[in-house]
Image 1 (tube, rainbow, N blue to C red):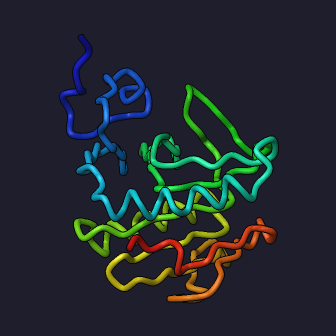
Image 2: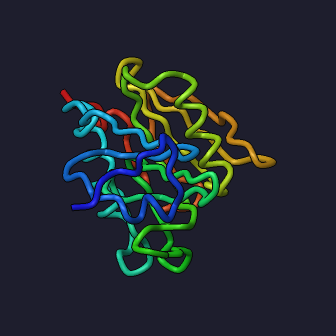
Length: 185
């Protein structure tokens, strides 16, 4: 059986050879493997409630909507791989190498958890900006709002913070998601 590399940092090639840990959420940031705890129920429900309208309103032959079940390679050196809570890709833009996605989604969604620090959040947003993710939504279950970030001059900048109304992704103008329907009862 393969084991994790002995060093505290892994390269892309070493990571490809490590065993898959079933049901674990694993990100690699600058070569450091970070195993995250399972999401809480409210987190999972928000992601599920977001997935459904995207799946219903987008043409499956043109778009791919993925939830926390794939690795998004940011860079191979220093190796960084992220796991968005939800990502929407135009199928024609996906670059797959070694079974992982090496291209930016047109929209990434994150649901905040109390365990994440502000620094970790900023690192992740910087990584999304680095690969050119044009739009990121950050949901706060505690505040019951969503922060909309748009890529401008290589940085993700806040466009709005919404507690109600309709979410309309820039790249998918026909998609509309009622914010009030996202929060679990």
